[in-house]
Length: 166
Image (cartoon, rainbow, N blue to C red):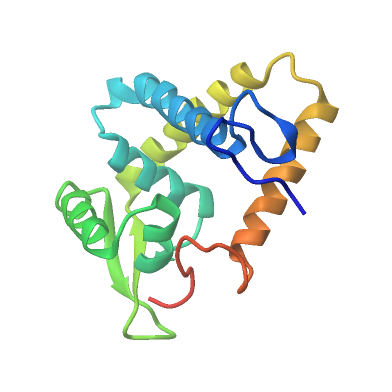
């Protein structure tokens, strides 16, 4: 059984310097910030470019609930964002053919080129940040991240939200 954090700062698995979760959060926040800085010339807010990025990465329409979970926002927040992106000609929403209660989000042609550009900038940043890290270390890190994600998706795991449904 793993150790728990004490008020003095001792952390699980004997890493007293810092908590894994806090470090993971900080790295993700700084990574997103670095990418946001590089994408500023596109004139898109972080919320907008992240939405286009996720839709491009999945290369297929996503329903609104799945997209909200990927972005880490609540449904009403996403609806407002999608309304703005729709008015600006980036995307459209359409009824899901399999379930009329669901709305799929689809990139429009204008957005596809911009989303590919965003994706290229994101991959360039990733390559720069990972430079000098051995393939073995990166593979180990990826295995840990994939294991944590899988645990959080398990019915008995700690869940952030349900990816199923509309």
